[in-house]
Image (tube, rainbow, N blue to C red; front, side, top):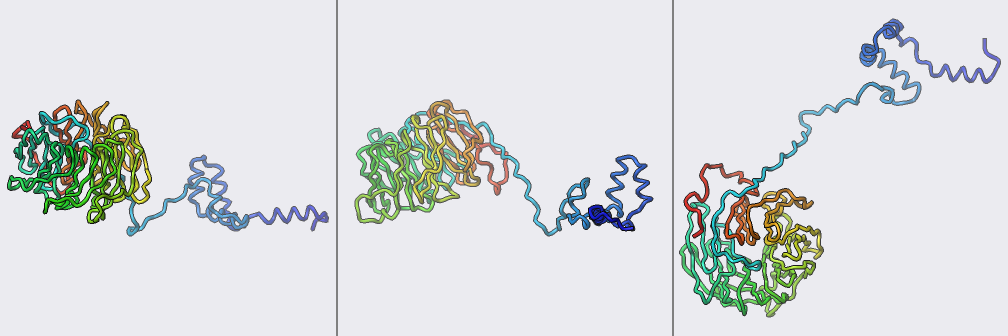
Length: 426
């Protein structure tokens, strides 16, 4: 009999509307579930086809997604097809040896922050200047030889730099002369009058015939070694030019000086008819002499520079805009910088106060490793042609070799120990 009260009738209608279909229910199953233990009940409830149908009906009646009503079920993992890309496994951390592979004596090497007395050429020959003498060590056949001993009035040797062809070596002297040697024929090819009033503290080849020299008078000169003539000069530094580095594409020259300034010069000025050229950028944020300069091999417009004892900072510069990207306080004077050719890493050698070698991760500039062994400032640093081995020379008169950048993948490992036949440069 229909209720005469309108409110009771409306409530009855709302109640009936949410009652599920009784025909889809299994009362026998319900009695079994009541008598079961909770753990068994949950397992049965989640797997029963009646339970699934019940949740579907309930969700349809309540106008809710059935997923919301599945309280006990965890989300199913998506099934990947064989053709779907698999996630790459994380790269294990690279082992960085904490000690040098070998230590050699380098007697009489000059303890001078502004000089450049060590270089490793593309023919796998290392050159080092010890006062008035220049020695070569061939990494391929493990042989060493003296290339030249300069006269007392011209010496000492203040800089060495390999030509990109790997056979010629430029030697800067305190007398302002520059000698170019053919190391294969073991003979001097030419002598350049650099145009400096004092010693040639830095050298940099732009290509196989353009040699750039930096002097103690702050002048930078471009020389054509084929005709022994000056092309032009760059003037901007007011003190000794400690560092010179051409960019990898040969379009820009970076110079650092004892005046705490870094200049960037344009290659187009090499063919310019003007006697001097104005810089592209001038960076004056360092507070000590700048010798350490390194162009990034994987980002052509990125330059790293390092300041001396009163600065102790590595700074990163954008050559497109001239903006400083980062500055890191290393805690020691920065003597040299090298980029890893195979990884995004930067290596720095230091002097006072720690005399260490530090490996940095780019671009975070997080310290990855700190290598110790030298007992005095690590003034000179260079790397092998394959980019794996780094050589350092310090004021403690030792030359050390570090496997800091890894092992070349294409070269099988051998048991032959380098430097097995000798333990001194001379």
